[in-house]
Image 1: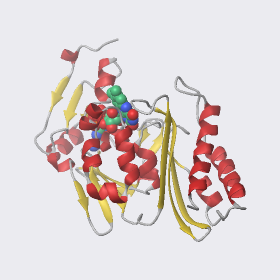
Image 2 (image 1 turned 45 degrees about the horizontal axis):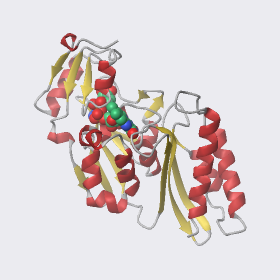
Image 3 (image 1 turned 180 degrees about the vertical axis):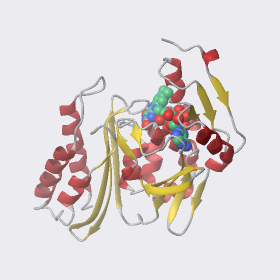
Length: 291
Ligand SMILES: Cc1cc2nc3c(=O)[nH]c(=O)nc-3n(C[C@H](O)[C@H](O)[C@H](O)COP(=O)(O)OP(=O)(O)OC[C@H]3O[C@@H](n4cnc5c(N)ncnc54)[C@H](O)[C@@H]3O)c2cc1C
């Protein structure tokens, strides 16, 4: 049922400290709204429990891309369009640009934020596989202070995250180590544009001669949360990608990925299709490594 918006209250504190103070004084009462591309759908369909919205969309303090020697730091309020236009991200973290360009329409990308994509905590979202493969970390902020944790620990279950009721996501940091790494990402959906993924796989790998020296994989829609595929990584790390060995390496990766995936049947796809396609994507990535 559609919601009556007159039953909702919207406030837009003038700075980040005021947002933190407000959510700390009544933890869990307010829903943070950034671009609103997800939240407004929930509101419109009567699924938004909180009657009080606290906007962070206008806060410049959350909208930045800063590059240091070690990492690229991206504010939670950075839009997909900002990400698509950033030269350092385009050069060093192309999977993130790819994910940003897949997310909804141009209108979505102009409003939707990286923080909203992550905090919405959908297992099908587009940026999480790339951020998992890049071994990103997230910084969470509250009046109690800040904490930085590996992004791979942020998602606790379906739509469940590490965020405490008085915390917001402040930024995402990606290490600047991927020069020379092979990078891969593919999303399989009903269409190429404007479709939520049936499954998606992102991977980065460092190849030494014919050997996979290091590999990191992130996947969408293979579990109740975005999945870092540690089992598949372990299964192929150190293995050969020489012509005669590739088949066996791919077989090991496929089997390990199947063991750690728990996809579901839903309106977009079936568990069986998701598992089969994800394994094919992994094999496709591995087969590209020797080039
Ligand atoms: C037509 C349409 C198509 C879409 N297509 C895609 C797609 O292809 N791929 C995809 O991944 N997504 C898609 N989405 C979903 C959505 O656009 C993205 O998830 C987007 O990144 C959400 O960002 P936002 O800033 O609009 O979040 P909001 O809607 O403002 O917020 C989303 C959730 O995150 C919370 N939140 C936001 N920022 C913070 C923060 N800094 N700290 C704590 N909590 C926070 C909010 O409280 C809310 O629960 C689509 C949505 C629509 C309407």
